Every structure is written in structure tokens, then in C-alpha cells.
Amino acid sequence: MSDIAMKFRSSLDVEEYCDVELKLKSGSLLKCHSVVLLMNSDFFRGRLQSRWTTKETPTIDCTMFPDDIVEHLVKFMYGIHCPLHMSNIHDTYQCCDYFGASELLDKCVQLLIDGISCDNVFTILLISESFSLLSVKNKCFEFIDCNMENLLCNSEGFFTLPLALIVQIISRDTLSVHEELLFDHLILWVEQQTVNLEPIREKLSGHIRFLMYLTVLNLLMFKELRSMLFQGVLQQGMMFW
Image (cartoon, rainbow, N blue to C red):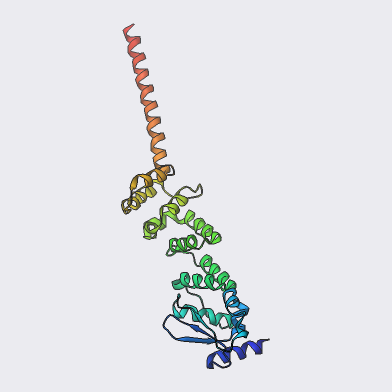
């Protein structure tokens, strides 16, 4: 079986026995073997299942993604090792998702999970939200829970997040952060928004524990002051009597 795979890879390099062409964004044609594409992609399986009824070499439009991303996908299908990179993981995942390349999709998800760091956690969180990757999203939240103060002080990524993700982060009971620091950064985030701010404030205010703390503190101070005043009135009354 390994000999067959090697022969396919060798044939790809010299464009030998290729029976399908992929039109790339640059306009060039990438010649491949349909059997390899059929075995590794739901998309190509659907497009090529009737190829035996025509004598012409089918050409499939792949111009919606950068050339290097499509070439990477094809090489992976041939068993050629191509390392994934965080710099283009968004395009790679989108390409694999479009062409139904489930095996490479799984590798993209694992790279996202394993690659979470203070430098990129907010970027990965946005990717996970974009593609509904719940496992990646949960890992990002867990990382943010433990590193929020460091992230706020050393990363601008927080300010790139949409309101929905901001609310999901600050509403977590497991979030470990100095509440006043978080409050200050929320104010900065709100100031950068160009839409109507009132709905934003309404959605945020119920989850800002610093404001809750101030409310409780003010209430306690009021009760203490009222008690002191009451005691003072009693003392003055006793002196009067």
C-alpha cells in the first residue's frame, strides 16, 4: 500500500497519469489524480463521481482560496507532510471545511487547541466563534480564566472582541481577575465602539462585579452611617432628659 502511495506522489510531481485539473486563484492549473481526491474529500467525491461519462479532463474551480492553501490541502491528501502554521490556520480551516477534508480539519482543531498562548488566545477565540468550534472555544475560556490580568495588561486582543464574547468572558464564575482592572478595560473597550452605546452598557452592567461591589459597599456605608446617626440621636435625647 505504501508503494502505491509513493507512486501517486511521484506521479503528482511530474503530472503523470493525472485526470483532473484544479483551477487556482492565480489562474494556473494543478493537475491531480481523481482517485486520490475522491478518497479524501466529500466535495471532490460529489463533483467527480460522474467523470467516467466524459472523455474530457474535468476542471474544478478552486479560486476561492489562496494557491498555497489549496496546494497544501492536495499534498496532505497525497500523504505529503506539510506542517500547519498558525499564521494561515483560518484560511486552511475554511478551505478544508469547504472541500470536506475531515482529517485535515481535525488537525487544524488540534493545532488551535495546542497553540493557545497569551499572544494569540483572543485571535483563536475569534476563529472558534467564526467556525463554531466549541472545544476550541472552551479551551480559550479556560486559558483566559487563569491569565486574564496578564492578558489585559499585555495584549490588545481584548479590544478586538465583539460584545457577545466580552459578555461570555466576564460572566464566567471561574474568571480570575482584579475587578477594578477589568472595569477599567471595559470602559476603554466601550469607548472604542462606534454604535449606540446604551444597549452595550445594559448588556455589560449586569456582569461587572466591580459595580456590584461598589453598590454593596455604598449600601453598607449608608447603613453604618444611618446607625451612627441613630446612635447620636439617642445619646442627645438621653442628655436632654
